[in-house]
Image 1 (tube, rainbow, N blue to C red):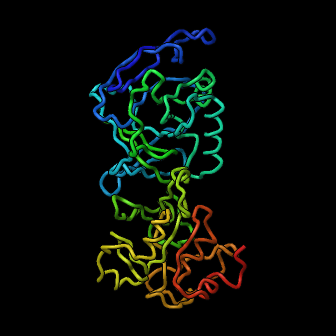
Image 2 (cartoon, helix red, strand yellow; image 1 turned 90 degrees about the vertical axis):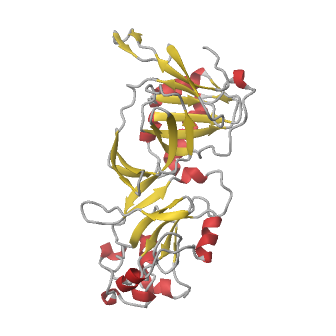
Length: 384
């Protein structure tokens, strides 16, 4: 292994050799050719190990669908849809123009290593935990494995075997013991969990991803996501039935966040202002008259400050009146999942109440301030 200058971004690509089992040429982890790409930014220093056991695990290919709000990508992995906030990536690494060996865009998994030696057991345990605890993450994101560390970590033989067993095509390694003079990782380090890796030949950027869930009970006005201090409407719908799609981030992103609401997905009744969005109050006429909010309502901002993630605005009856389902005039009333969907809801916070009853990917819904109202929304049938 050649040593790299600290101001370099190193890409190690597997060299094809003869496989004694298949008598064919394929990439293995035994032979590498070294390409050194200058890196302008010193925040992250990775060694990339590409081409490890590409044929062991078959995954769903990434298919780019379209873009929303300018540059944010929507993509498919099998039957799952995702949004990547490519317009505001979590981190950008500048490279030389010769970056063809990095295949992008590609699903990626970022693991922050907390030990000096990376073992196969450590990787296995981390990946198993990601799969067990998070609905957004899937094995498709193991196509690209990114390891980072505040230590001068090294990969032992069992870790290399683990990478081969999960079929990762690209492995991003932390700095080795030879680079103890390198600075610690910068605060802009991406969070652990699923990411989208993109390359244009001059830069490599890592973006947060959201899984797009179908609002099949029509409880949301629209799905939303944060963008540089304000919020965007996703504005996408299920092609079969026209249900809104709601962008839900990975819980893994917040695993090191000690705030009480970190990682919690929250729906907000559409009577509260959220910066960048119109507050419709359940009224078409009001929506035409009003403009986007300049600030987020203090109560909702407090939830965000405590770590909560607002994923969508939820339906309310016109001007939050205590309407029965048949009295909703401007918007179609939310569906109650109780009784196979044939039980009606009532009152103005029905969107939030029905969504909590319907979706396991949603943690909280913020209604109005009348304590009895939520009892009307799905009662007298048990919440269960």
